[in-house]
Image: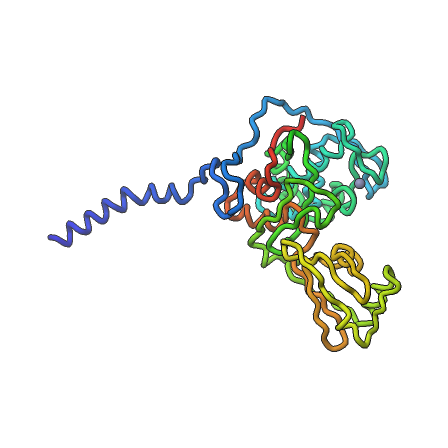
Length: 342
Ligand SMILES: [Zn+2]
């Protein structure tokens, strides 16, 4: 009899408690709470979009399209679709795609001449160009179809959704669109903007960017024969005193930044910045180290890109953890507001 009572009590407990447990597990976290894993998150900072009565009047943007070598004007949101399609794999989480859409829109807003920006400095008459290494990447529909084949409809619909659901929103600091930087993969931390660009911008701090270790380009090794290495170095720095017979003794890292990337190194008798060294050898990042084995220089790199601002792989990792696009953006861009472009 006693056993039966225990069983009945157990059933009652399961019936009463299990549903509330399930609700607690699967319901969305209170959006007022900061993301729990972000330890240096500014206390008390709201993650809500800034309350604004502003209505969005979609502006027109003028693009220099380097595929057709022509200038094209289009609605801003249509341009943002082409940027997200070019800058982030469409298979990424929806919240990561939305974070990318806001970043792309912000970069455009900052440059638009009708909003007080300077436009693209390479192609006069354009607000932005489609070159990834100048303004930001943008691909036309023909290129999207080429890249995606029979997945075109599915992929473009995801990107259109990300753009639509963030329609008009940009990141601002003290009421102005921020200077946006983003990149592919971090080394586990973001970089201070001053280490890479000659700029001091308060919203770029060194922050953690976990969950990137499995990314395709997280770790890569570049190798050069001693002669190749010296030839490349001499293409820019002629009197370095480098010699193939003692190269392994002639390269020395002098200092590292707070994010663990190299700041400066000595190559022969020449002191250079890691950012210049990275460009010279076309390395993935400035988080690198050297190995000298069997007559070759091996340069092991971690991360892909300059490290300033949002890591796209990191954004996807945060989205997988259930963070929304505002939490992702406010993690990588500290102290910004997310508000309607006016
Ligand atoms: Zn440009």
